[in-house]
Length: 230
Ligand SMILES: Cc1ncc(COP(=O)(O)O)c(C=O)c1O
Image 1 (cartoon, rainbow, N blue to C red):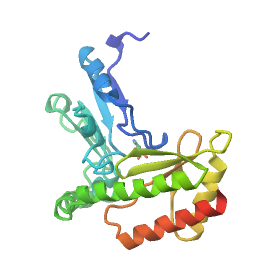
Image 2 (image 1 turned 120 degrees about the vertical axis):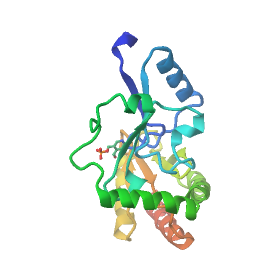
Image 3 (image 1 turned 90 degrees about the vertical axis):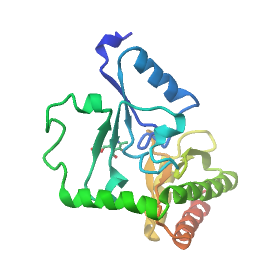
């Protein structure tokens, strides 16, 4: 075992991104955070992919009522402009000397302006509500595909952060088929991404500002793709 004295922090993604859009089992993060607290270990939530409303809450860790000591945020924080943030309890953040948390490209003014605009638009355009609605629409469609296509073995994720795990009849991960589907979609103007340690999970990360027509167009292309390769 590892002596807790030697562990400074535990870092985890509340919902795994690259790993395959995996949401944790019930109670998982309460246990992890409890263990950290008991042993004086910091709990760091990597919200880079799961944050900014993607799972239906501003930050995915909120689903479990856990307050991390530190949190990393990026990607949607400035709608694609290069910006990232380390957020945390004042006691920890202030323990570093002034300027001690930063980097060569930190606090780019244009990116910061984009970040502020994102915050405003989140409220004005009710993006969190849109995310919840988007998640429900995607889930209904994906569950339908799970029934229709033998390749679709599992619908994974949380809120609008959803993925489809593809497997063959013998249960092996269908990585080649996932690649084929991505290529089929790409040829028709739709970019979808593959993730997971076996490369067999199709992940969907549509912008919250997507119109119903755009969403339907994208989902139709995916559906036709499944019909073609299933
Ligand atoms: C969850 C998560 N954390 C961290 C990163 C790393 O970001 P970067 O390499 O841009 O610092 C990514 C990038 O995809 C990510 O998805």
